[in-house]
Image (cartoon, rainbow, N blue to C red; front, side, top):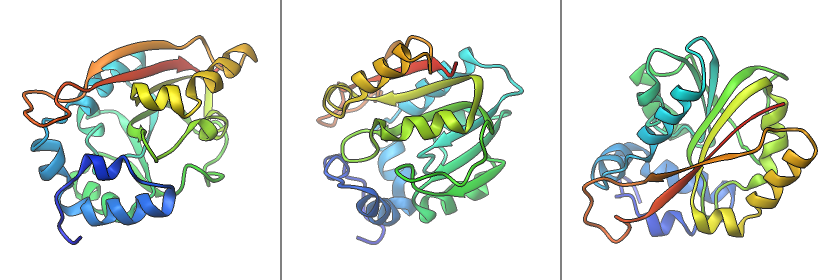
Length: 208
């Protein structure tokens, strides 16, 4: 699949970390053009704007599932580290100069990151079909400081089907996070493809 065009329906069929690493590795070189630009993909811009409104300019941010840096393009001037499972995607992000550092890792495992390292977490396209579920939330809370803000995108079917609702509710109930605020965002702009009317949901909360 070298230099293949991005296929959203194929991405939605990803089954676990190894599948994601392989598929996004194949897509990396053409991702910005064949998906970001060609699909009118504006969700990264929308999520970046939400995070900017919720945090201070001196905070250290972890962009999980950073890919080629589409979210970070909307956060220029802030201190951001990239975390992704796919080295090829990080290779595309590197020369853009958007990130302080690039971290290769798997969100479904223990992260090689010290406790209380970050004041914010942002993500777009990570909490979706076949990618990463709510099992990573306790580990993300571990590596963030009290008061850290999360702005993470998902979509309705994943929110309902992957257990995010109950996982977030339990974290609120146990005093781990603030009540979650939700933002309804467009995912695409000026698009003509079959997903053009899809909407995203952005979960915003703070670590307590």
